[in-house]
View 1 (cartoon, rainbow, N blue to C red):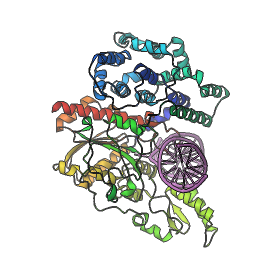
View 2 (cartoon, rainbow, N blue to C red):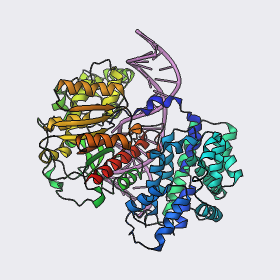
View 3 (cartoon, rainbow, N blue to C red):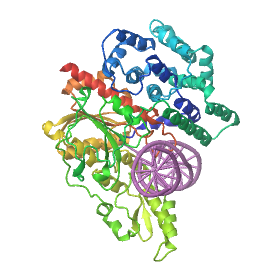
View 4 (tube, rainbow, N blue to C red):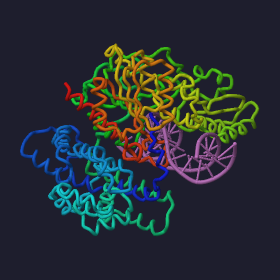
Length: 599
DNA sequence: TATATAATGAAACCCATG
DNA sequence: CATGGGTTTCATTATATA
């Protein structure tokens, strides 16, 4: 949920450059190879056992040699176990880019991209064997070059800094210069990927195609084509020697998570959480279920290896909404908020019944999105249908149904279909009528805010177990609050909201929540902050000491770069917006450690 | 400037079939 | 087991309009 709107400043992004870099991001990357080669190919194994011993020092030094601070290294190893180098590196990159934003300033790339890109490249398990070994040696033997030289380093001009950085990482000056020339303004992560890809290009024809395209002048489609070819190539390659790459999270079918009230059959009442995952605080993370492959593996790995619960909200209301939830809540004795919402289109929108043709078999709406169909489309459909008085030919039926499903159209008159009204979307998502209305928000922005929100009944069902645990109310940290789905859910469960820290970038959304807060006569405190990236440990410590800790940390981080609806930048977790997931992790992890210290 | 409008596919999944 | 058809998807961007 949340109007994840670093997007608000994304107009400034140079998409041409970005496109340029897409290919390198996907390409077999240097860091993945470094790690795997150096540790005898510990790939995608989240459960490596940790054993104390001489290897520990070596391991620490290995990561110190990569320029990470010692405290991070120690913590990351502690968190992930010695054996799981991949996860350690994941954690380190997260710490590096998020706890120390300076790192990101080596480039004019959006700085929070640094960690995710590198993280992702570790995820890429394609490891071609013909990698330059010498690079490895240079890398692991290099001293902690960020240590004593830091001051000189900082005073250098930007591109010099980057160059030095790369050389310190073990690349030749020539490699670094070429990469910087080809990828102006790119982050270190991108540049290292580029060099890695260039080295692999000796055996990789697609890369030369890319060169050719650049000279010919290009259009985006061709670029994309190449990107997909490259991915296909990677997939094929993966199938070869690496067969045990099956640790991919699969979506359940039916998508009922640990159980939904309407389908009592598949109800699970018990699970075992990893020790690290157990609260306090409770946490609840949400995102789209149908994310690019590997996204949920990464999310789960960061969130203490908790298995995601995938639930389709069609079991709670009249619209589908396939989402994954990672949380450490109890899962027994859940209950629904009342009254139960209508669960079919005809119950939710009774006025449509009269016009609903019998050949439209839909009983549920598809996912409510952020944009609606054009008037032109509905008008075209009306004209198509008016040609026939009684019987509509099958092919016309098929075409109309296809559009209706794609755009969530409902029947509002003879031969007339229309998109849902904002207040109908509010109702379907479980918000009070007019929740997003007024306060100067435009109609288009209402659709956007609603489309980005939780389905309240679904979330409330999961959070319902908190009612008995916190009879006196709770303190909640709500990240990416959006229009306040979590707040509304808790309130409707009858759980008192004592202290709520709500972080939301969009002022319009903050106004909506503030207004709801006043209208529902809340007695607790509501603190609003704009930006999760600005929320640091000191502030968290203050909040925690002022009201004794958070009981619950909720957040649905941006899905823009994960959802299939995005034709332009479905870049996965390393995307401009979706990488804010790592801030959710960072903040949750900080809260956890502060609260553990107190006990 | 702010808001509304319309055009813009492909990844990843399901499932039946050979 | 592969494969091909069918279905769904918290959106972005350029342009028009007020």
